[in-house]
Length: 259
Image 1: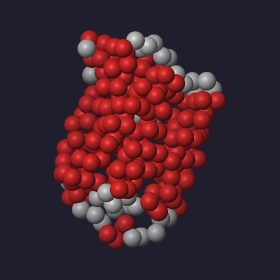
Image 2: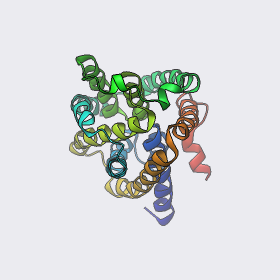
Image 3: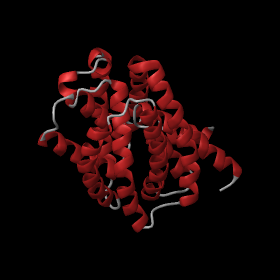
Image 4: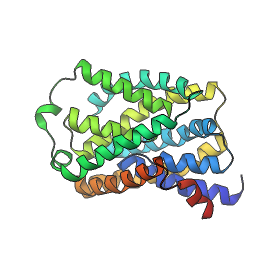
């Protein structure tokens, strides 16, 4: 890895860490860059998990310091997500993800409509739902979200945000904080599967992680300082770009190659 590759990975990491902490879908960029640098899709998928883990350590620390993290409920929801993520990581070793990407593109478009035309649910906390005990349906939902997260991770933030806002009643900033905690707790387990199958490039992974840590810190501070309204518009922009990438309208890989 030369100096240009090093800085390209760090810059990509900053972008990815920022996007993933505020919204989701940033891994479309990091996966594209890693594959552009010669990694196979499976190896890029595994290597990307290092950046994800570091990014969420920083994000959780920052959100907790700012007093917006519901640690207790996040820990409970992380249990089924973690179990699902291990299963998803085993699937990822062999399975083609093209169908999953198209399905996720459709789901993102649905969430885009919700984000644009029903903003009050994003901005105002639903106290009755937040204080309500978790039920088996929520645990089952987070298990399947974990399966997807372990499988490819791209866009997992949107599934978590949708579930935490519509199902658990959080406003957007607090939902982001819990989302980051859940991803942090399940990532080491799915990462272990990729390590076991020797699908990690450690040099590229930790270089990417330098950037994701910086991006996550900036994003978590901006989320709390500027509030749910700011985060909402970041999500709108990122959803449009991510969906365009998944449907083949925009290729982030070719963009970085030209750069």
